[in-house]
Image (cartoon, one colour):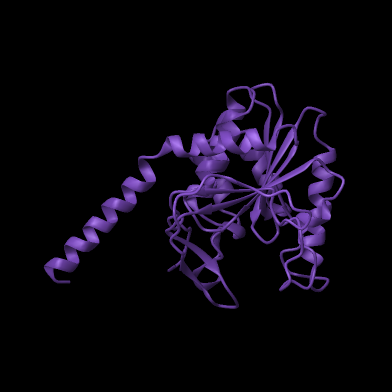
Length: 273
């Protein structure tokens, strides 16, 4: 690498680090905007691009900002088979042994091209943040809601199973409880995109006090799979700064769109990524 390339690489690394580390107020501000727009809706669905560092930080800020007396359930796009381990971790001290037990399941150890971006240190840090709130005396739980990860039952079966699980989890909440769902932005859509031959999970949650938010960024990168064995870093189209966008149309996909300054690729776990 010649001198100019070395300088350019160094400046890019420093800029990326500063962009990620120097804006904690952005997460708090955006989380406050989401809570304000969602109002009394007790089921909040967040549609994300998998594989970023920033979205878990935003969800952490969102959890921290609710009233301390509000029971909270964070539902993540993890297999329901992880729920025993999640419950054990939430009840633990969060020490090294507890972290190892949570991290050691096959789910968190997918490797190379099969890595879809959901398995990252950033997601584990989000779970730890929820555990820390619980340790402070808050009523906080974390569950997975992905029942059908093998895709059994044909097109649409996975989303139908997700919706069934989310509905059951929501009905099990206390009357004052709130559920915050973090899922991919297709699963999180209110409507059925024209390219999708089946309704996404969130569109099957009719009758519930639902508000959904799409989390975007004005630039940067994320990690995702765009087809079989086609996983990797994806660049976002650069866009100008924009305030939260409210959509009230009958055929809307999301009630609210929010735009973080930048996405950076998550700290992915395992393998030669």
